[in-house]
Image 1: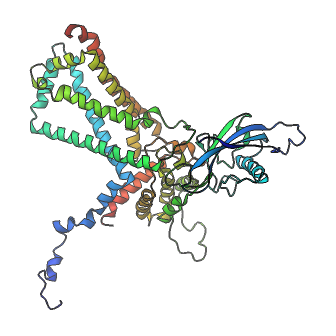
Image 2 (image 1 turned 30 degrees about the vertical axis):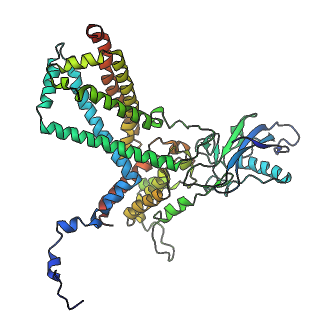
Length: 274
Length: 248
């Protein structure tokens, strides 16, 4: 856990700060470095000078990595894709908070203006047994994929595109379904949960399809199979701290967990010998 | 094989589902699956917990009879009424032990699961304000309540004097000791903290969650916990003030 090989990276100049008209942030980063799955990890300290407040957090890490590459060192591994807050690829923990301090914001949409000059930022990967660390800030979230594969879908004939509005859905149901469907599967809920529970994620998937007519025929199977897959992956049990809800970048509500419980209980009672 | 006469001719199978087929392992599979699942465990915790809260309400109502008269006659009548139930009281007590045992058993199971699911800790731990002191200390307050209940049963239920002529006197003489009063205040304090999260959490687990009444559910849970806590804490406090000097 001790700091190793401190590095000072210069030249992280902001676009506006090129002429020195705008002073950027001075930051100390303590970044978790881990070579491979199961390998021992430790924090590595880096200092960044003149960081533009217009940068996103990931752009700030890009600058750090460019400096590390120039020095012939291994860049910090982190995941990202769209950088628009909608793909769910990015995500790590900044000063103990998944996706950092800003409410309902993914780390790619978190800007450096959220921080003060002179701050020390401790950057760690999501920590949960079901999300093993692969390298540095990258964790294996394929457990979520396996839960979705167990039932987080509707089986439809993939022939020609169906007519629009062929299936009428009441506005309230569509709204409820969309609120749950806003989940991007980033895993912040698991990272924030003291129990490493995935019930907000699974609750969002089950509630989303339970609100739609297309989801009805597989409703019971979905609840039973997704909960079984969730338990098999080694996620914890919900204690209703609701840190997951507070940490969710998409504002998924805790009512989805209660609905998951209802769906699972009803499906269990109806399942009989299945 | 086909030429051998079957001991059960085909017609015998068409008698409809009997007890034997109802108890076939396959038809009971859902029960095992439900109670072995993460959500099933939480349901058991919630249902047993809420039933125990129901017991606490009745227990407090009975105890408040201690204030009904100075002689303790009404409390004695209440105690005698309970003892007169005979086998029914035994059944009720067995039920309570069963509820408590299930609650503790599944608490230990979920504690084990949750420890296993989060083995490594963050270097910096920062809550976003959703977690509370009560929710974060449920296993600790639960363990304190368990120890307290054992002490409490030894003090009263297992003391032969409790079935005697003056049960109110036993309460007064027991609680008049400052040490006993302190134990009861710590026990009741832990119980109150436990319930302040537990009641609303159990209702959420059972599926009672909707944006319209979630604030009400949370306030009702906290309110009931505080009422029970104040009620139970009043006995050791009153004992120290009113009974402490005279009886010690």
